[in-house]
Image (cartoon, rainbow, N blue to C red; front, side):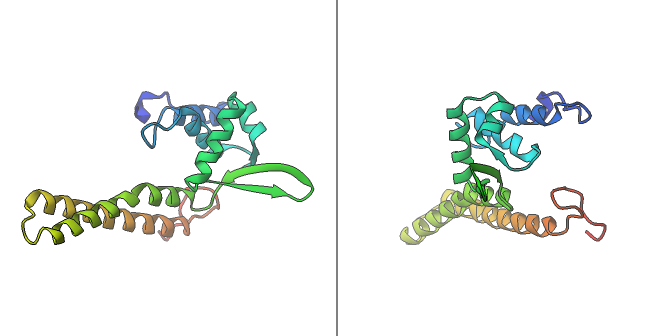
Amino acid sequence: MTASQFPSADLAAPDWQRDFAEALGGFVLVEGTPRAVMRVLGWMVVCQPCEQTAADIREELELSAGSVSAAVRTLGELGMLEHVTRPGDRRTFHRLRQHGWEQALTLHFRALGELRRLADSTIDASSGAADERLLEMRDTYALLEDGVTSLLRECRWLGSKRAVPGTTRLTADV
């Protein structure tokens, strides 16, 4: 599903945050990712306050306790969410982790390096018998691995240049 298949959220509408979470729920980052995980991720990107309990998330997105629990666990394992506590409060709060996008993408794209290393070791083991197909595989994954690494580095650099913390507006010198 693409962004153009969703109605654009009316940012002036009172439910723009929920609309965003619902729209993101229609996307799948990894094949088989439950829709609830994407909805929770969407909510955590736009919710106020930025720290939410499982009950807050469950109430806002009208999800079951099990769906919320599985979603925050999954997002935590991906490095997208962190769990925080407050003194005197027994509840656990969840919030987006700083650089969580970068960490999740790094984990996701780790396979590029693994596939390139596998192709390299196979080329070495072939004693010159490897043909163009394996060489092309190695070269393609090496290019992708380098490109993703550079993009993630640039993403972090751009993030450090934001004018207002928590926004995507960049300072004028970028």
